[in-house]
Image 1 (cartoon, rainbow, N blue to C red):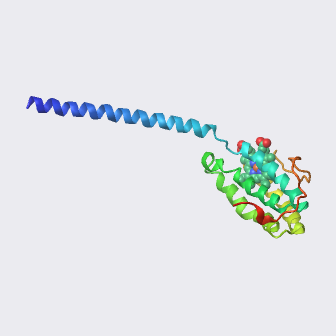
Image 2 (cartoon, protein in one colour):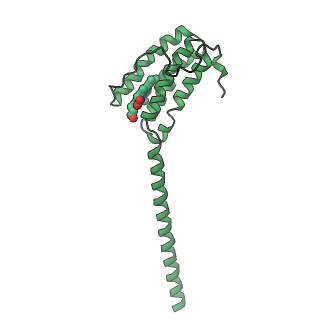
Length: 166
Ligand code: HEC
């Protein structure tokens, strides 16, 4: 009887220890996950890339390098991916912007329609700035700039919008 009781106690103690160990591991893992998440960019870092790629789309379309224009648009959107994790409440506003408002720019690129592109591109800048205003950054005002951000690329190399690898 005594033996049984102490066994019971031992199991209880073991359970308490392992349970505690698990809890500590969980807390540790959570701490590490939070640290990793804290190091992943939110909006500001990818937005710098959005700004540069957005600028580069213009000379690419103008120069008839349609694949480069499509590529810049694709990775302009891709640049924002970390915000899915770090800014889950704000990211859907970006997604809605890219899938909605920005679709007209993408459509003109796919159609190799520079006139349509110019109109859609110019119009979309207001939406960029409206989001900045709405999220408390009215002082970040994107302007149309026909010169590329990256000057080391040939914007006049003829290409098709569908040439971008999947
Ligand atoms: C969903 C809202 C939203 C949309 C749409 C949006 N932005 Fe932004 N952008 C932001 C926010 C918010 C910031 C401020 C960064 C932060 O919050 O950390 C920002 C910052 C910027 C910056 C400054 C980055 C830096 O730190 O150097 C640039 C450039 C920029 N955006 C360009 C653009 C362009 C170009 C577009 C349109 C093609 C655009 N943004 C569309 C929300 C948006």
